[in-house]
Length: 376
Ligand code: SF4
Ligand code: SF4
Image (cartoon, rainbow, N blue to C red; front, side):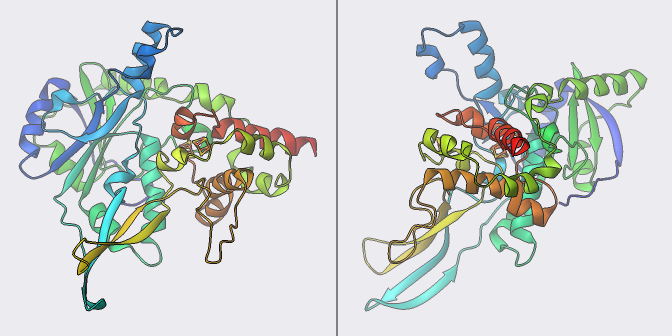
């Protein structure tokens, strides 16, 4: 866990045919989660105008989710992105955090509910998602650490892998295509094998369960070529501003009319927040059981794009317009938290753009801001 560039403690070659054996040896001690292709039969199949072959490729690359796996065969390690980011393993979409009991409708007892988590491995995490997790570390561990997050994070081992970017990916443009921060082990796909870079003792322990082979000049060159192919050039080249200037640009462009046009397009569905690896806002409700004697305090993901998000007692809404809510989400990524943390809280994963029904995406919004501020 951490975000300084890590020292390499071992490099090796792992033949892909040894993955089943590796999983077999790890499963008694760890839960393993990895990308599994889900979208075998989705909306693309019923859209008559699409190029079927192109869509089949898109489905393979995009329709994936991190799921618990019992065997390596089920993994789709050649994927572009998962729909839901790995934050779900650290801040579950819905979680009971306190149990309470009542007597004569008065509070009788309270119990903090701590997660009982087996050590787990996230196998096949991309660089942007690792950067997203490091930003969650900042939000949940710095200051007053959140104990449920912390206990899950301490039990986690992260095995990274190089990715297959699409036109929505722009991690490089926001400085998030980093392979040596946060990972315990990083795998680079070089055909029949993975080039393995080990960064932590925990990583060394899990990857050494099978026989590894020595790297040579050829495998190192193959690794460099594979990482070059993984660069998110298509999306990153479209992203026009220098990301370092984003806080200043957003201050200068706060009143520009393009924000209203974005607001008019937005449906306030909240999807962009749910799929974002760095969005963590939640709400808390008390859920009473039908016996009216006990219940739980439940925390669940929330979205700043929903109309009700900023409503306070008395009915006032501090962000009643879709324009202001969109601006707020953008500023959370490129201004408020960036000023604190020093790096954008958008890691360029492209999920919000891929999933938005109104095709609102961070590349377009950043470019509109940049171009319109330039004109002022
Ligand atoms: S996903 Fe798109 S339409 Fe939905 S709230 Fe976000 S920006 Fe608006
Ligand atoms: S704002 Fe969009 S592109 Fe940026 S990290 Fe969140 S989901 Fe990914």
